[in-house]
Length: 189
Image (cartoon, rainbow, N blue to C red; front, side, top):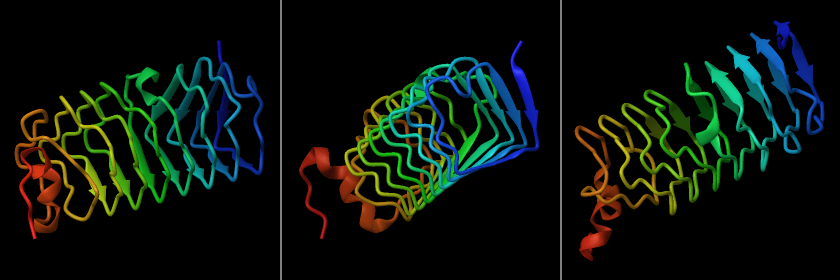
């Protein structure tokens, strides 16, 4: 049975490999904490907020994120694809998620606001109604994704093949059309 922690604020902690294993955190706030060395096992975060935290290279294979918000966090090279998929709800604001993976996840309605999403793997991900607000999507991969009603209007540097990605009613800005036409070698000026 995991240890349970409710409504606690954690600040300036550097976690080691097993420090958070077999624990459940609810309504907790983590500020300026470093989880990079963690190899998570049976960890649950419910209604938690992470501010200015570092997760880069953390192994989060056995983590449940249920209504979790990340603000100004560095989350490079993290594989979310192996997280617990039950009630997987996350939002990101001002985060760096470069080289992370969301492969095959259902992240319907998630918002990415002012995020760096360079070379992120969204392959076969359900991105229905996802908001990409002012995000850098350079070299991110969307093959076989479902991005119906997703909003890319203020984002940039994306290249998405409309034949390989479902984009029904997705929103794009006129200046972003070249990212949809790259495969056809059409020049948009």
